[in-house]
Length: 481
Image (cartoon, rainbow, N blue to C red):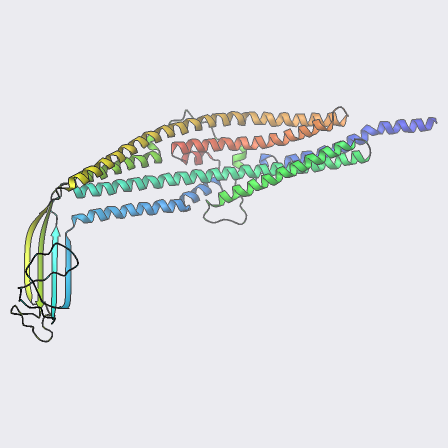
């Protein structure tokens, strides 16, 4: 009896040792799995850098080509406007077979009945003769009260607007590409942390299963860990979905999509951008503001051109022509091929002045509409100025907040690890339920995700700040090489 009691006492003494051994093995596995989710475990070696993605977007993104072709169209339109200074030369060569019946009387201007020349012969004969004509007309406007110059200036303003639009498109494409890069890195870090969490729960489940099988812990503890593992797997599924979606967004900014998208993200996860001095901001330097100023100038140039439209048009003209006909003035018809060769020559030189008096009402109405358009563009310019200032102020506040959070997350991570170690020790000693250990594990995973995302958030806020300024170069220069 005494030996049985001694044996039972020995088993009770070995019970904490067995539990402690199992938990030590579990904690070693948890620590190894947790280390896989640290920011320093990012892709190693050469990969696609943030600068590569931005340059590819600014060079090859379809929106850039669209803006470039629109710019090319405005450059060509300037050349078209300048051609108005050149003289106009019209040439004509004609051959026909027609009747020669002419009548006295007036015919209102129209384009249906062919005009007749020659005397009225008083007959209605169906016989036809050959006719031919060749001629050249040269016309040129020596002065136009500034109308052609105004058209050229309007085309130049359109070119300036297209040029600014191209710069704005490059800014937007570069900023969107950089944001997609950071989003994909964040998604990868989330997948890494979610995968580590699944491994952690698997390791803990094996340990609790062994304890429950040995009747050292209640079966409810194993069920709780199984539930936590199922939720962790669901989070991993969602994290992988977000990773695939962010990858699809990033790939569209690359000129060619590699089979294995390896990002050079380690510098972004291990370093923070250096603090900058009090940020300065001038909306006038932003490409969007430059584009809007060009839009106002273009509208004003169109108004100026309209105001030059209601003026007399002076045209110098010179003409040389030759005609041939197979009909005589007495009504006879010449035989054969007579008339197919022009043989009667004429020339003329003169000066035309055209002025449409009643166009004043139409031009005045168009000028009023264009004036309203110009005022609308000026109001839009003021609105863009306010929006850019608002965007810059928000980006500055976001950067300040992101830096403060990035300074706090290491403390959060350190405290979460300490809390996990304490919960582990208390659970090992039987002083705390499984709920406390599970909660500590969730907090540790979340703290590691927060620490990685906090660093990326600082870079994202810096990106937004420089995008609000209208220049991504300071942001790209701040990224460690």
